[in-house]
Image (cartoon, rainbow, N blue to C red; front, side, top):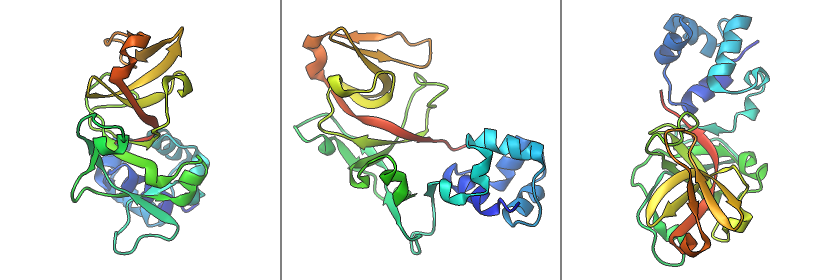
Length: 221
Protein backbone atom coordinates (compact mmCIF):
# COMPACT_ATOMS: atom_id res chain seq x y z
CA UNK A 1 0.00 0.00 0.00
CA UNK A 2 3.11 2.25 -0.14
CA UNK A 3 2.79 4.86 2.62
CA UNK A 4 6.48 5.79 2.65
CA UNK A 5 6.18 9.22 1.02
CA UNK A 6 3.35 10.37 3.28
CA UNK A 7 5.01 8.94 6.39
CA UNK A 8 8.31 10.71 5.71
CA UNK A 9 6.48 13.98 5.14
CA UNK A 10 4.55 13.63 8.40
CA UNK A 11 7.71 12.81 10.32
CA UNK A 12 9.36 15.94 8.91
CA UNK A 13 6.37 18.10 9.82
CA UNK A 14 6.33 16.82 13.40
CA UNK A 15 10.14 16.77 13.62
CA UNK A 16 10.17 13.17 14.80
CA UNK A 17 12.86 10.57 14.07
CA UNK A 18 12.41 6.95 13.10
CA UNK A 19 13.66 5.96 16.54
CA UNK A 20 11.14 8.25 18.29
CA UNK A 21 8.25 6.92 16.21
CA UNK A 22 9.31 3.32 16.78
CA UNK A 23 9.32 3.85 20.54
CA UNK A 24 5.85 5.41 20.43
CA UNK A 25 4.47 2.44 18.48
CA UNK A 26 6.36 -0.25 20.38
CA UNK A 27 8.22 -1.52 17.31
CA UNK A 28 11.81 -1.47 16.03
CA UNK A 29 13.43 1.45 14.24
CA UNK A 30 14.18 -0.93 11.37
CA UNK A 31 10.44 -1.55 10.91
CA UNK A 32 9.79 2.19 10.57
CA UNK A 33 12.72 2.47 8.15
CA UNK A 34 11.21 -0.25 5.93
CA UNK A 35 7.86 1.58 5.91
CA UNK A 36 9.56 4.81 4.87
CA UNK A 37 11.36 3.02 2.02
CA UNK A 38 8.18 1.18 0.94
CA UNK A 39 9.95 -2.12 1.61
CA UNK A 40 7.11 -3.34 3.82
CA UNK A 41 3.68 -2.20 4.94
CA UNK A 42 2.36 -1.65 8.45
CA UNK A 43 -0.38 -3.94 9.68
CA UNK A 44 -3.92 -2.60 9.75
CA UNK A 45 -3.57 -2.16 13.50
CA UNK A 46 -0.33 -0.20 13.21
CA UNK A 47 -1.73 1.93 10.40
CA UNK A 48 -4.62 2.90 12.66
CA UNK A 49 -2.11 3.77 15.40
CA UNK A 50 -0.15 5.92 12.95
CA UNK A 51 -3.30 7.77 11.90
CA UNK A 52 -4.22 8.40 15.53
CA UNK A 53 -0.68 9.51 16.40
CA UNK A 54 -0.48 12.03 13.53
CA UNK A 55 -4.16 12.97 13.90
CA UNK A 56 -5.04 12.40 10.24
CA UNK A 57 -7.51 10.14 8.38
CA UNK A 58 -6.02 6.80 7.30
CA UNK A 59 -6.73 7.66 3.65
CA UNK A 60 -4.23 10.53 3.82
CA UNK A 61 -1.41 7.98 3.95
CA UNK A 62 -2.37 6.89 0.44
CA UNK A 63 -2.80 10.41 -0.95
CA UNK A 64 0.27 12.38 0.15
CA UNK A 65 -1.00 15.50 -1.61
CA UNK A 66 -3.50 15.90 1.23
CA UNK A 67 -0.63 16.50 3.65
CA UNK A 68 0.05 20.16 3.11
CA UNK A 69 3.26 21.00 4.95
CA UNK A 70 6.84 19.82 4.61
CA UNK A 71 10.39 20.77 5.51
CA UNK A 72 12.46 20.14 2.39
CA UNK A 73 15.99 21.14 1.46
CA UNK A 74 15.71 24.92 1.06
CA UNK A 75 18.04 24.77 -1.94
CA UNK A 76 15.52 22.61 -3.79
CA UNK A 77 12.03 23.46 -2.55
CA UNK A 78 9.08 21.63 -4.11
CA UNK A 79 7.02 23.35 -6.78
CA UNK A 80 3.92 25.29 -5.76
CA UNK A 81 5.11 25.77 -2.20
CA UNK A 82 5.71 28.80 -0.01
CA UNK A 83 7.99 29.16 3.01
CA UNK A 84 6.78 30.63 6.29
CA UNK A 85 9.62 31.57 8.67
CA UNK A 86 9.32 31.80 12.42
CA UNK A 87 8.61 35.12 14.13
CA UNK A 88 8.80 36.32 17.70
CA UNK A 89 6.57 38.83 19.43
CA UNK A 90 8.25 42.11 20.35
CA UNK A 91 5.75 44.48 21.91
CA UNK A 92 2.34 45.87 21.04
CA UNK A 93 3.04 49.37 19.72
CA UNK A 94 1.93 51.56 16.83
CA UNK A 95 -0.98 51.14 14.47
CA UNK A 96 0.45 48.47 12.16
CA UNK A 97 0.14 45.11 13.90
CA UNK A 98 2.81 43.50 11.70
CA UNK A 99 5.38 45.73 13.42
CA UNK A 100 4.70 43.85 16.66
CA UNK A 101 6.39 40.81 15.12
CA UNK A 102 10.03 40.25 14.13
CA UNK A 103 11.36 37.43 12.00
CA UNK A 104 13.84 35.21 13.86
CA UNK A 105 17.20 35.22 12.10
CA UNK A 106 18.19 31.79 10.75
CA UNK A 107 14.95 30.22 12.00
CA UNK A 108 13.80 27.00 10.33
CA UNK A 109 11.27 27.75 7.62
CA UNK A 110 8.30 25.49 7.10
CA UNK A 111 7.14 24.95 3.56
CA UNK A 112 3.47 24.78 2.72
CA UNK A 113 1.58 23.81 -0.37
CA UNK A 114 -0.04 26.81 -2.03
CA UNK A 115 -3.30 24.86 -1.88
CA UNK A 116 -3.08 24.87 1.93
CA UNK A 117 -3.70 28.64 1.83
CA UNK A 118 -6.04 28.68 -1.17
CA UNK A 119 -8.36 26.17 0.49
CA UNK A 120 -8.56 28.46 3.54
CA UNK A 121 -8.83 31.69 1.49
CA UNK A 122 -5.65 33.03 3.07
CA UNK A 123 -2.73 35.07 1.77
CA UNK A 124 0.50 33.36 2.92
CA UNK A 125 2.19 36.76 3.06
CA UNK A 126 -0.05 37.56 6.04
CA UNK A 127 0.67 34.34 7.93
CA UNK A 128 3.00 34.07 10.91
CA UNK A 129 4.55 31.09 12.70
CA UNK A 130 5.57 31.46 16.32
CA UNK A 131 6.22 29.39 19.44
CA UNK A 132 3.53 28.97 22.08
CA UNK A 133 4.58 29.22 25.71
CA UNK A 134 2.85 28.06 28.86
CA UNK A 135 0.30 25.39 29.72
CA UNK A 136 -2.95 27.37 29.72
CA UNK A 137 -4.14 25.77 26.46
CA UNK A 138 -3.11 22.21 27.35
CA UNK A 139 -3.84 19.69 25.91
CA UNK A 140 -4.77 21.45 22.65
CA UNK A 141 -1.57 23.52 22.59
CA UNK A 142 1.46 22.62 24.71
CA UNK A 143 4.46 24.65 25.79
CA UNK A 144 6.88 24.81 22.85
CA UNK A 145 4.35 24.00 20.11
CA UNK A 146 4.58 25.95 16.87
CA UNK A 147 1.44 27.74 15.82
CA UNK A 148 0.51 29.27 12.49
CA UNK A 149 -1.98 32.11 12.36
CA UNK A 150 -3.25 34.57 9.79
CA UNK A 151 -2.58 38.18 10.71
CA UNK A 152 -5.75 40.23 10.21
CA UNK A 153 -5.42 43.92 11.01
CA UNK A 154 -9.13 44.41 10.35
CA UNK A 155 -10.13 41.85 12.96
CA UNK A 156 -12.36 43.18 15.74
CA UNK A 157 -14.08 41.51 18.68
CA UNK A 158 -17.34 41.67 16.74
CA UNK A 159 -15.84 39.59 13.91
CA UNK A 160 -14.27 36.75 15.87
CA UNK A 161 -15.58 33.19 15.56
CA UNK A 162 -16.89 32.30 19.02
CA UNK A 163 -14.87 29.49 20.55
CA UNK A 164 -11.99 29.64 18.06
CA UNK A 165 -8.36 30.02 19.17
CA UNK A 166 -6.68 33.36 18.56
CA UNK A 167 -3.32 35.03 19.08
CA UNK A 168 -3.74 38.28 20.97
CA UNK A 169 -2.00 40.62 23.37
CA UNK A 170 -3.46 41.94 26.61
CA UNK A 171 -1.71 44.98 28.06
CA UNK A 172 1.27 44.18 25.84
CA UNK A 173 1.56 40.52 26.90
CA UNK A 174 1.16 37.84 24.22
CA UNK A 175 -1.61 35.27 24.72
CA UNK A 176 -3.05 32.31 22.81
CA UNK A 177 -6.65 31.70 23.92
CA UNK A 178 -10.17 30.83 22.91
CA UNK A 179 -12.28 33.93 22.40
CA UNK A 180 -15.96 34.70 22.34
CA UNK A 181 -17.96 37.92 22.28
CA UNK A 182 -20.89 37.86 24.68
CA UNK A 183 -23.17 40.69 25.79
CA UNK A 184 -20.70 43.32 24.66
CA UNK A 185 -17.80 41.69 26.52
CA UNK A 186 -14.77 39.77 25.29
CA UNK A 187 -14.51 36.40 27.04
CA UNK A 188 -11.03 34.82 27.11
CA UNK A 189 -10.98 31.11 27.91
CA UNK A 190 -8.19 28.56 28.46
CA UNK A 191 -8.49 24.87 27.62
CA UNK A 192 -6.65 24.04 30.84
CA UNK A 193 -9.32 24.16 33.58
CA UNK A 194 -6.75 25.36 36.11
CA UNK A 195 -6.80 28.78 34.43
CA UNK A 196 -9.82 30.99 35.14
CA UNK A 197 -11.99 32.60 32.50
CA UNK A 198 -11.39 36.31 31.87
CA UNK A 199 -14.12 38.79 31.01
CA UNK A 200 -13.15 42.15 29.53
CA UNK A 201 -15.70 44.94 29.47
CA UNK A 202 -15.94 47.42 26.62
CA UNK A 203 -13.82 50.04 28.39
CA UNK A 204 -10.82 47.68 28.62
CA UNK A 205 -10.87 46.49 25.02
CA UNK A 206 -8.50 49.25 23.92
CA UNK A 207 -5.72 47.37 25.75
CA UNK A 208 -6.31 44.23 23.69
CA UNK A 209 -5.02 43.45 20.22
CA UNK A 210 -6.33 40.41 18.36
CA UNK A 211 -3.76 39.42 15.75
CA UNK A 212 -5.44 36.47 14.10
CA UNK A 213 -6.98 33.04 14.28
CA UNK A 214 -4.79 29.98 14.81
CA UNK A 215 -4.99 27.69 11.78
CA UNK A 216 -2.34 25.05 12.55
CA UNK A 217 -0.47 23.63 15.53
CA UNK A 218 2.68 21.50 15.13
CA UNK A 219 4.51 19.68 17.89
CA UNK A 220 8.00 18.24 18.33
CA UNK A 221 8.21 15.08 20.41
